[in-house]
Amino acid sequence: MELNRPIFLSIGYSTCHWCHVMEEESFEDEQVAQLLNDSFISIKVDRKGKT
Image 1 (cartoon, rainbow, N blue to C red):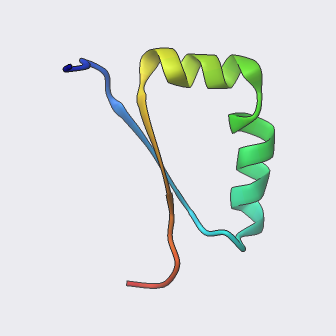
Image 2: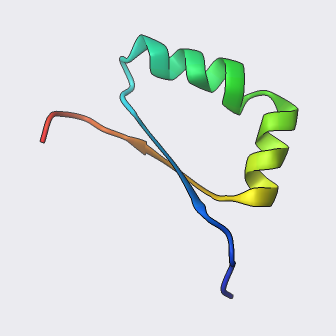
């Protein structure tokens, strides 16, 4: 199955304050979640260290 949608990539860290704020204020909002699900292939990455 091929989806013709752009990728929405969110890179964060489990102890990052602002990553949690983004999750609570944006990703948990029903309208935002619906928009992301309908318009993008969403990928969330939890980064554990510096590269």
